[in-house]
Amino acid sequence: AALSIREKVDQVRGYLPDGTEAPMVFKIDPTALPVLTIALTGSDDLAELKSLAEDRIKPRLERLQGVASVNVSGGLEREIQVIVDPARLQSFGLSMTQVAQLLAYENLNLPGGEVPEGTVNLLVRTIGQYASVDEIRDLRLGPVRLGDIAEVRDTFAEAESMVWLNGRPAVSLDIQKQSGGNSVAVANAVKAELKKIEAELPGQVQATVLSDTSRMVVTSLESVATNGLQGAVLAILVLLFFLRHLRATFAIAVSIPVAIISTFGPVFFSRITLNIISLGGLALGVGMMVDSSIVVLENIFRHKEMGKDIVQAAEDGTAEVGLAVTASTLTTVVVFLPVVWITGLAQLFFRELALTISFSLMMSLLTSMTLVPMMAPRLLEDRPARRENPRIARLSAWIAGRLERLEA
Image (cartoon, rainbow, N blue to C red; front, side, top):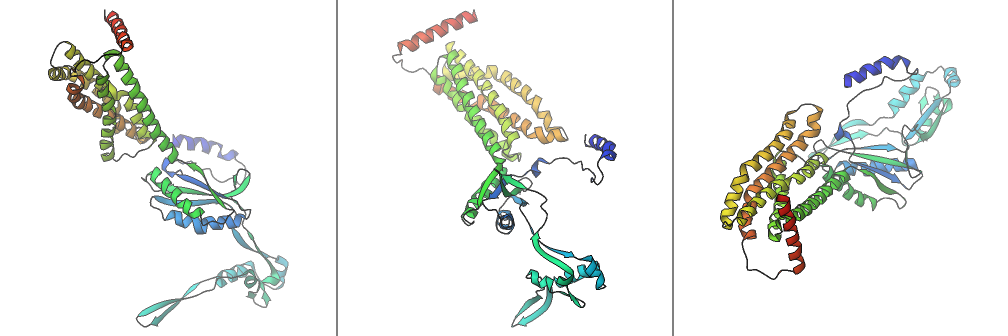
C-alpha cells in the first residue's frame, strides 16, 4: 500500500507549485503519538513562555521514568539579527564572508587547559560568548566597528508554528513515552510532576492538559468493569428465571470475577499490557465467560431434580456435559487463536485481542469444570424448608407452568 501511494504521488509531483519540497510518504507508528499534550498560557510574552517551557518544565519532565522526550511548539525564540548595509560594506572593502567569520570566531567558549590545585586538577575554560547586543556592535572588523556597517537587532526568529488555546497564544509540550512503556503510568507521573511545577510557576502562567491518551485506556477499563457487571446481572436474572433457585445463581456470580482475575495471569506472562486492544478482547470475552458455567450448573441442577445425591449430581452432571462444553469453548478459541501467527499490520492490531479472548475463554472453561462443581454441593444441597413469600411462590409456579408448556 505504501509503495502504491508513493507511485501516485510521483505521478503528480510535476504539477506541484514551484518551490514545493518533495512530498514524504511514511507509515504512522501509533507509539509515536504523544501521551500527553500540555499548553502554557497566561502571559502575552511568548518568548518568556517558551523559555519557561524549554528551560524549566521540559528538563524536569524528561527525567521522569518512561518519558522518552518532550517537544515544545509555539512561542517565540530570541534571535540576534545582523542586517549588513551592502554599500557601506563595499566602501570599506569588506565582504559578507568576513562578517560571518568575525561573528563565529568571537562567539566561542574554549577550553583553557588544567590548573593543579593540590591533588585535584581544575578544568579551565575561556568565556567568549556575547553577553549583550552592544558587544556585537563594538566588534572590530579592520578599521571599522560592526555597528558602522550593519544594524544589530535584538528580536525574535520567525515563528514556524503557532499554538492558540481559547483564542489566546500559548506554548504546547508534547510528551512522548518510551517504546513499550505504560501509557497510564507515564501520564500519571507527568501529571503528578506537573502539579509540583505549577506551584513554582509565575502567578499568571497556567498549565492545561489538552489531550491525554491514557484516558481512553482508563475509560476502556471502566467499560470492561461495567460490561462485566451488566453481563453478570443479566446472567443471574436469566438463570434465576429458569432455575428459580437463588443459591444456584450465586455460583455464576462467583465464577465471572474468578475467570476474569485468572485471565490476567496468562496475559501478564505473555507480556501483554492493559491497552485498548487487550481490554477490548477482555470485554468480548466477558460475554462468553458465563456460557460454560451456566451449562454445567443447569445440568447439575437437572441431575439433582432426578433424585440423585447432590455430590453425585455434581459429578455426573459435570461429566455428562464436560466434553461438549470443552468442545464448544475450543471451537471459539480456534477462531481467534490463528490470528496470533498472522504477520504484518494485522498481527500488530489483533494479536493481543485474539490472545486475551482465548485466555478468557480457557479460564472460564477451567472455572466451569472445577469451581462450579465444587460449589454446587454447598449451594444446591437441601435445607430445612422456610416459609416462602406467597407472591414469590405464585410467580415461581407461574414460571414453572410456562416452562413446562414450552418443553411440551
